[in-house]
View 1 (cartoon, helix red, strand yellow):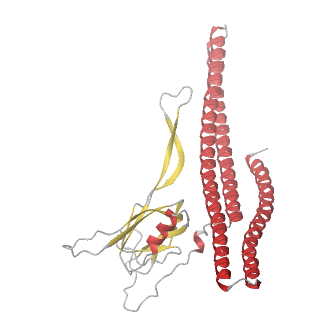
View 2: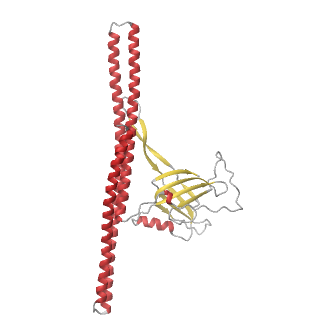
View 3: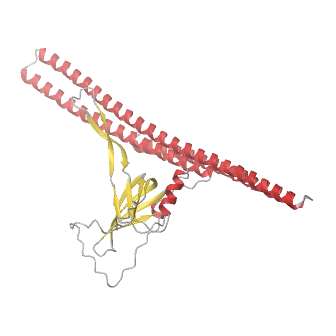
Length: 363
């Protein structure tokens, strides 16, 4: 079976698991919703019994207050358990991804070592054959032809081995993709069971493009022109935080993985996990607490992902040249402003964001 056939078989098995997971998740979600509804129903029934009783008004009021407090304690306990379960799901996802990355690394190292070992066996076998030919009583020209043929066979064998190693590495990469897809699916279903919504895809983020004004100059940018660092726009998902004055730290890197084959004199490097650096958004302080509220919610354990787009604009300040989309961002640091009675500077508010992925989309 070729790589396409293997991937097709894995995809079919993966879809069957997803279907079973979807069905189980739907049942569990319904059970959770029914349980939460029963808590509310129990409070309503208790309140009704109190209202229908012949107790004095003051006692009724005290009883209903106690019932409300018990209901709040129950719902708070449920919410706390859900948040703890959500944290456990996200931690399990992180560990699963780390395990997948480690398995991929070990598989690639094993493939490289096996490739070098087989090449060593071929080289030794060729050397033995050449020794036997050289020690024989065959005519010199015949020996030369045989030795040349053995050299060509070794080269062909090496090329085939390299192709097999490349196919094996591609299979490992495909398997990693399938595994990560299943981990993401299971995480989303687990959060759905708990009542949490997954972060919407970047395409769902509304894009607000200002209406061109007649007074604006036309776009004269050319492909080879340098662009000004002051023409940009920040679109921050569902957080209405106003205009940002600066963006720092937009970068991505791929962690190198080092390994050394059996006969390698030098250490080799292959690409490892991609990583998006933290991005810092800066804005002048206005009388809104949007950024702080988001940070406060995260500190309280309410992790709310947002999608962010950094849009570069042309000379006219309106035409979109390119955008960088950051998915599943969350705030990791908030910097407030400095107050100085001797200064006339504007107050600046900063928010550092962690992102899952970054992508570039041409305008």
